[in-house]
Image 1 (cartoon, rainbow, N blue to C red):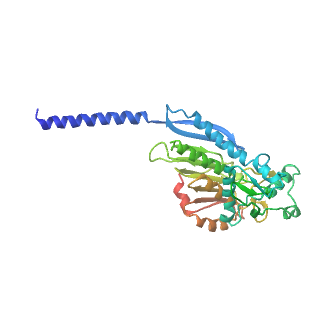
Image 2 (image 1 turned 30 degrees about the horizontal axis):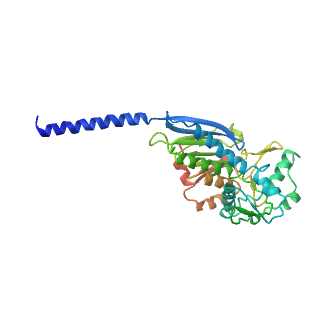
Image 3 (image 1 turned 45 degrees about the horizontal axis):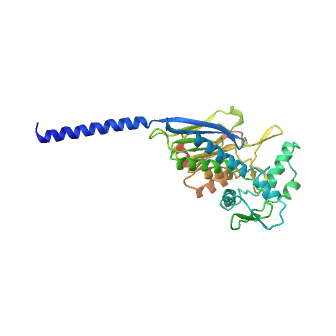
Length: 339
């Protein structure tokens, strides 16, 4: 056998070994779904990760639950640090708060300016009044009661060393907390080297890469309209994005046989009633959740104008027109995600 033939056979042999190794390697790397389900922030949460079968994900799921629990505690208005900010009896002009709460509050306050005042985390008094009036007194609060409420965002003043001015601000983070916590979970997963995941936190959904190359996650959306028996409105497909949904059914109240929105219009302190639902698709869960809350408390024309500031965000509004017809209007880029 000539020397060049021997070299050729040797090269072929090496290539076969490499191919066999790669086939074995990728077979070993086949991903399987592992899931944890728990309830946090008054909502069921499902976390699916797609990893090698041999990978132990229990410590990861335990840490994810701890992240959600942490932000549930930080945003709990009945007890914990928000209650301490509101009700403390300190005579000091400033108080020190948890570092992560400090960042959380700064993020929340930033949306007041970004939303032109539509999202105001200092409206705790208004939310308390509506909850008490509807759940205890079974009626709407009076205009007189609403007019004397304090919702001055400027009283939430940030100082150095994780301190804030002790102005006893009544803070409500409900409009942003599930998205904020969910994005923190996404960051944790990616830090752990898990890039294939799907987090369904009811009103917020966050997806990483799909476990099959070239494919997308498909999420079926329920109709927000009462008269069509909650049927499927549309299917949305996406990867490496977040979806947030707001409607009157999200934490809403029943009053006089109707659903009253939990989210309040910051201009009137009245429940927002401009639409049946809004769906927002953005790059991360924090932004998607905040924008969904902002848009839900605006009229649709105002929201359409406002969202032009976010060209990479897709939005779909559902509403019932004056003739009683159910309608839907969307940004042009929303149709890129329709399955």
